Length: 212
Image 1 (tube, rainbow, N blue to C red):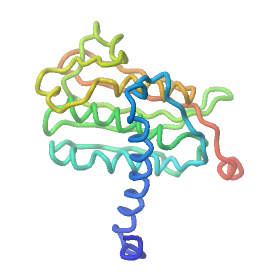
Image 2: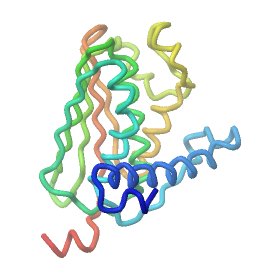
Image 3: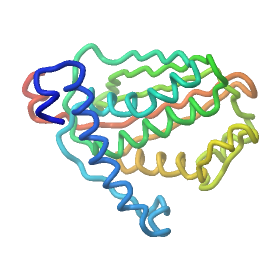
Image 4: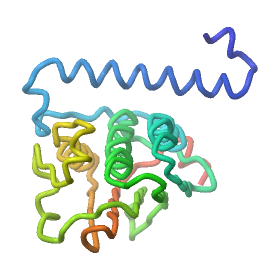
């Protein structure tokens, strides 16, 4: 596949995404071999020099087929330039996939999903904020405090038929916390969509620091 896709677009891009996804999937499947691995408190992160653009491109590729099948409109607003970060790219990819998958699952066909990325600087702290917003079924305010509970599912029967154990948000929250960040989920109520905001403090890679 590498030889066939050499110097050919978009095949080369697809092959690069496939390689990263296989690597990610192998690691995640290994961790799901035992039931104890489902405990979010036993998760870990491995910080390496990473590309923010690659971290974002893999989740978008992973959900593209589902977006097209539901005829959603997925709008993406990323940073103007790539940023090198010292983070765990597999884990951040997992967080973004979880948030995007929930937006897709709980938004009826032909809905709108927005993914916005901003670099936030507060004092001496530098971070990346990823906001995923949809106009789907929403959630009651009374249920929001429980959204990160393991095995919690609050959607209707139609959405639950798609499967899922209800552990995705719990794991995503823990992975974000291991990066020193937070996930905040808000909704104006039923049928008024959901906003999921993931903020991750980051330490710039050496090459990025040298260029600033």
